[in-house]
Image 1 (spheres, rainbow, N blue to C red):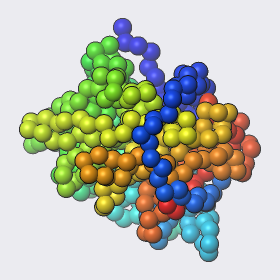
Image 2 (image 1 turned 135 degrees about the vertical axis):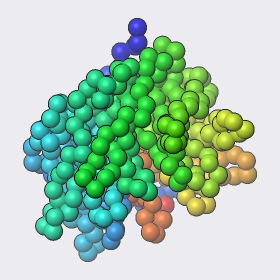
Image 3 (image 1 turned 120 degrees about the vertical axis):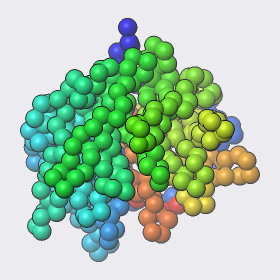
Image 4 (image 1 turned 45 degrees about the vertical axis):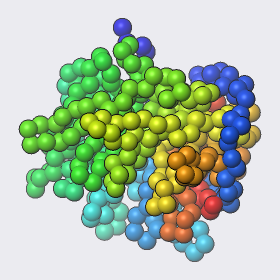
Amino acid sequence: MLPAPRVRPALTMAAMAGLVTASLCVAPNPATASARSGAEQVLYSFAGPNGAGPLNGVVAGPGGVLYGTTVFGGSHGGGCVFALIPKGSGYTERILFSFNGADGAKPGGNIALGSHGDLFGDADSGGAFGGGNVFELVPNGTGYTETVLHNFAGGADGAQPIGTPVLDAHGDVFGTTQFGGTGGQGIVYEMKASASGYTEKVLHTFANTGGQPQTGLSIASNGTLFGSLYGFSEVNQDGTIFRLQLRKSGPVYTDLYNFTGHTDGANPIAPLTVDNHTGVLYGTTQYGGLRDNGTVFSLTPSGHGYTERVLSALGSGKDGFGPQAPLLLTASGDLFGTANLGGIRCAGIGCGTVFELTPSGPAYTFGVVYRFTGPPDGAETQYAGVIAGPGGELFGTTRSGGTAHTCYDGGPGGALGCGTVYKVAP
């Protein structure tokens, strides 16, 4: 029998509090170096009706506009898609769409920018059959109109899409669901674009040997898809990295690496970062490593397979731990990421950190860029990594914190608030 599914929580992780608290009792990593500290600025605090719980970060569009989603709040309480528009020295929020359940609820990831100003995303629940949907928001001159590309019906069709969809050069949309499929463990889907709309195609069905993806896909420049499985299988409870190659003869699925739960890491829960020049994959695991506080790893093509390397095993306390977000790879080879917990304040568990890995010969030097302090600052980055601004600044979101006190849930760190959008200038 499979272990009970550890489905991605929405805004509460209280059940993890005991486990996280225990991990703080481990001594910090003595090899950790101090990075350049950053000056942080909260650009926007959510308050409920204007959104709550921005779990998945932001994406930058033309004109410096930042787009994102929240899992709660909005006009109907089912979450929303928002834009932060630069205005003077600050930003003005605009809700582009509020979910009401019938048209979807609780976006499962961020939105992906289309080539014509349209926005693509998925809703974890709601829709025509209650299993969520994939949607497109199309500019209509004065706002946006939602078009549902597909309502998931469960069964072989899949249910509860998760993560941010990715688009290929043809405008086709790819993603994953947590459940459904012929194996009941989720699917990889494609929304095939045509002149008449989109048609769903199941590319891969997960079975009892591993499944229930807890995040979306990454796509390489050649169209190859990469993803991860958190580890809900009796065969492998520590997680898997997989590849899906789209060939004329049909999709080819390959397990690239199975984590062991020891120093190599355990339970990947974030999309991978693909280096299209070298083919190297970068990612994070929530657990594992020397202190079981998570890792930053790479997978390098080697012969017919890949070789895994732990670039950093996160320490505890002020360094941050439990990373659940994708990494930002810069042109210089630096890696920026976030740790959901650790740092300072927030009931001693920490409000989370932004960290940096800097190449130093064959190794990497780990350092903390910023430690969140809780309201009115942000707290707990959840699944949100950072993106780079034109001046080297970093933008991201926190699920809690901010100036509002209308959101009671603060997760294991205990921070109140509906979440923030922030900027860090290293």
